[in-house]
Amino acid sequence: MSSAILAIDQGTTGTTCLVVGNDLDVLGRGYASLGQSFPRPGWVEHDPEEIWRTVQQAAATALDDAGLRAAELAGIGIANQRETTLLWERATGEPVHPAIVWQDRRAAERCRELPAARLRELTGLVADPYFSATKLEWLLAAVETAEPLAFGTVDSWLVWRLSGGRAHVTDETNASRTLLASLATLDWDEELLGLFGVERELLPAIVPSSGVVCEIDLFGATVPVAGIAGDQQAALHAAAGAKATYGTGTFLLAPTGGDCSPPPHGLLRTAAARLGTQPPQYALEGSVFVTGAAVQWLRDGLGLLADAAESSAAAESLADNGGVYFVPALAGLGSPHWAPEARGLITGITGGTQKAHLVRAALEATAYQTRDVVEAMPVALDRLRADGGQTANRFLMQFLADLLGICVEVPAEREQTALGAALLAGAAVGFWDAPPQSEAGAVYEPSLARDEADRLYEGWRNALERAL
Image 1 (cartoon, rainbow, N blue to C red):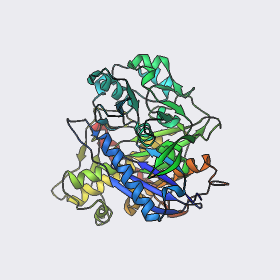
Image 2 (cartoon, rainbow, N blue to C red):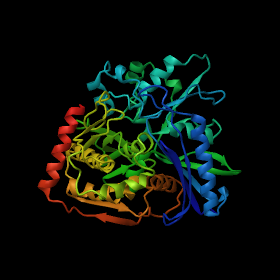
Image 3 (cartoon, helix red, strand yellow):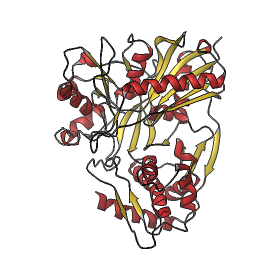
Image 4 (spheres, helix red, strand yellow):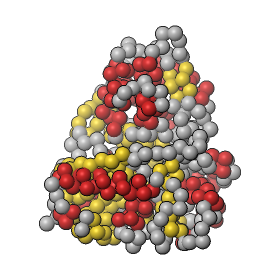
């Protein structure tokens, strides 16, 4: 008897798997960390085989934690780090190069040559090395092989490996992040393929986010893969409204129904998760590249923290920020600036500056960058649903509410990306009569005077101008 859904959330620094029950309750959890390599400044890569191993390890741990066998699963949902680009041999499934991660900047110069206005019109995106097409273009020029190849983002790679090479697919949300698909048709576009020199034979088939795409052999049991979505669209599906996910970066999405028109300045228009034969859905997105990664850098790069969890107490130990601002442009700047050449900057340092000021500045930068995106949105938000690992940071969540001047809600289960993947898979296999809602958790109300919030934000804007 089918009693659960396995949700796979393959992220930039690790893979989380949840075994999810009928009430969206988490029955079991598994996690495996994923390393990155930095072969040159601005280059970021993963080992594709390590990505696959983390999924196997986290899935086995989650099932063991739940006390269930794979045969008891009704289906599998996959959410994945988006834009990360892989290329492998069709005959053998062997990767021909390390995966190029979404943070990678190696194609920045190429992006300056691209027809930015036309790309925005066709794809809702900007000419930035963040997206997959220039990564794929670089790979095709760098790899020497006569063997037929297959391209995919992480979702395609996982389905290929899970299915033993029988299925080469991607969903609409991931396809819409490649610069190769038309946002209006949600299909590969011949003009875009020609621009980047990509043959259609390389590409996966595009499918809706919720629907059975194949059956796989998982730990000796046959289980359908029934849900696929980019991590941010999966979290948006779970939120059922505007949300911001706080992890390595921060991604704020607001649903726009069937509107696929070019987005306002500084924002992206992207495909949202679609159930089966329902009409296509879209969202506006602000993509901030470095938020949680800034705290990780303070920990791993500078040794200012033993554990990222210490950052909240360090920030709260100060009465104020001491005039210190940190613009964490460690991988350029995303929304709403789109400046791949921007570099990180710390301002306001004096003889009284302590390491706690740098930690606080890194956390405040997450809120400042969120406000940059919120102010670029064409509609006012009356509340924001926040998820992801950084929502455990009480200082950050309260400062976010203070700076935005709106209520910030944190669900009881922070792994909303995985729950979104579970909801998409469960809908496809009839696991729920009606999709359940995840439980509410902490609520942060603004408590800072608006003029003080605006004064702090003005200090950020001054530092930002220097970084730009």
